[in-house]
Image (cartoon, rainbow, N blue to C red; front, side, top):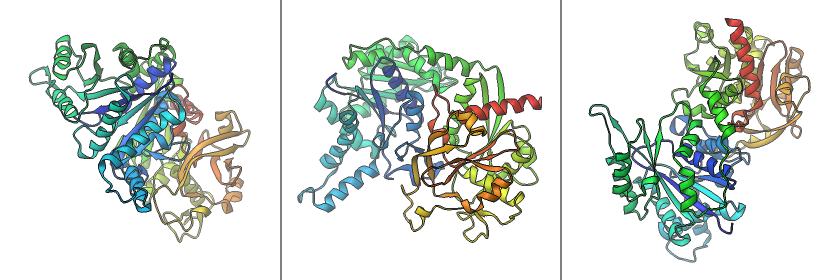
Length: 539
């Protein structure tokens, strides 16, 4: 194919309707048809990236292999498609403005007045089309964050309007996702919000080609005809997106609604094969028809917003499907944990995960959770700060260093078992300055981690400033808490594993970023299996 096709996905009426899931589903169906696809997210906020955002603000910060701190939707893209995204797959208004203003300061605009149109919109267009030009994808899907009508989204809407004008209707496609609310008082589905949302799009020069209607009740023929007529969309291009028990069922529903077929026809992509969704259907069946259930306690300090730990929760789901096991995740706020109630809060858990995070709020609750898992022989997985908490707990309780801590929390601790990495010293800027992206790790044979990975050389993604202090390593290993994974270049400890325990592993990296639906992460598979064994023992 000579030219790349571009699909733009917008949302209206309300946020959190699932644009990222619908976008990922359409991309998966096109991928299964033999097309080379990728997905890009345009975020309208002024932050350069979500790296400095509190998880309460924007959910988790997802990290790509090349070290980009991005929106959590990129996690969905990778989990559905099984391909890596990069810095180019996430564009923010902050990054756009920063780039344009830097050019202005250098004098690149030759004295011209710098304006939203054309300078900001031209840069948006350049970023959108960069993926298509550089990698020669057949289709680039671009999800525009926020809802239509938001002031901050207007430059993006104008930019994609221009792209359609420049490339033509057979090279561009607009998919608009809206809500059709159900009013229980009258027993009706209401289409007026969708009509108003499309009207706003039309006012900005965009006629949607496909409407995806999110609803909790099935759409009848009359509603579809009404929406098609009033929104100037073909009847078969009015797509139903009903609530489902698992997000991984959405691609199958979109296939049933013929979303991919409509996109193929409108983009004139004739030479494609029928998608083989058999393996995907099998995974969905395993998720929907579990033969056992386990309870996993997820200890963190952002648990009020489960999107803060989206990748961890999804990774547990992937691993559970491997064993036809439903993984029930119980989020436990680390600030709520005390010596008096730790046993009561954690006693029914078959496995415990201490989650990543920053800062000292809730840190002692995490340390108590680690202690309980270690002493009660409950399968334990510590991720990033969770691994560091395991090191602190062991140093205090087993090595006899009661004031051991991380210098992040206690800069003057006499026993800094976790310390600032050497290359981080002297860095004052917060954004984009951590150890980010994929780094190699050499695994020691004969360990539980080796049994999980079944290889000695791996690469995993990082997002941290502090690291295990190697000055204490000999003492830890004398007491059976060993470094089972080491960075071969820097000798930094990547994995700590307790020998005399059924399953007790802490990792400095983030394995949850690498788990996909069709290829669950080996660490989560091993952890879930150990937790299943624990559930049998507790019966």
